[in-house]
Structure formats: C-alpha cells, structure tokens
Image (cartoon, rainbow, N blue to C red):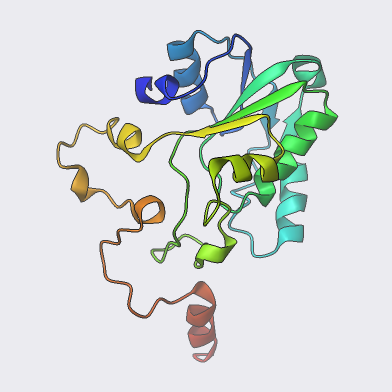
Length: 200
C-alpha cells in the first residue's frame, strides 16, 4: 500500500476504517505510522448500500450498518479510509454520524480514483449524473461530503499494486472512461428487468 500512503497529506492522528475489514486502512497505517484503531464496527449482515435503488433505503441501510464507538472518536482528529465513493450520499451520512459521535476533524482518504463514469458491466450506477465525482473537483466533493480534507489514490498508484505487467488488461472504465467493449447503446438494469417481466 505504499502508493496509497505516499499521496496523502500525513498528520499524526488516529486512523479509523469504514471499509469492511479495513485492508486499505491497515496498509495506510503501516506506511504512514499513524495508529490504527477500530472505531467503527460494521454490521456484517448489511450488504453494499450504494447498490440499493432509493436514497431512503440507502440511508436506512447505513444507519443499520454502522456502529460507531464514541469513546474512540470523541474529540479526535481522524483519518477515514474508504474503498470507494460512488454517489456520495451514503458516505456523507457516515461522515455526519462521525460528527455526531464527536469527531473533531475528518480527513477522508479513498483507496481508488474518483468514479466519474458509469458502469455497464453489472454494477448499479448506469449514468454519470448520479456520480459525485462527475464534473466536480476534489474540493467540491469534500464540501459535499462535509469533510476537512479529501484525497484519492491515483489510477497509476492503484495499478502499481498489481503484478501483471500489462496494465491494459484491467478494466478501468469507471475511473478512466476507457471501456473494453464499445458502449453504443448502453442498457440499464431497469431495461433488463422490463424485458424479464415480459417472460412471465
């Protein structure tokens, strides 16, 4: 995770993780020397929230998914390591929960590049307009997420973690806009669902 830690502005503070088992956070902590402490305990029975179809559903899922330990967060300057930020609304709910728990400062680090382009290969964000990074600067995204600072891992840094020498073999469409298969007539999950309903 050297590529991840080097791009961040490092401050001696506490490090928390919002990303499942926190492998990215552990790598960040090791490279930066910032101590890691599990201040947010996820509910393992709640799945990925960004794939839910409605914002109200996503908000409810976030409330069920996150269990913040106030004694670890209260009055602390914290670095949060996320695996990705898609629409941004779910992440903002997480940041607000940390504020309510007493976090003094929140510095968000994302272990992938900004997601600026839709995915047509099975992940549910089919339009650019619903992506927080589309046509926004990092500073504008940070303001929306209500964090004190925000930084992303670069695409080069992400691919440098892979042993495969030919980096062109990997799909980077949602970050770079370069699609492996031409997208002339993009389909959404809703059009597929309509077609499936016709079979019954």
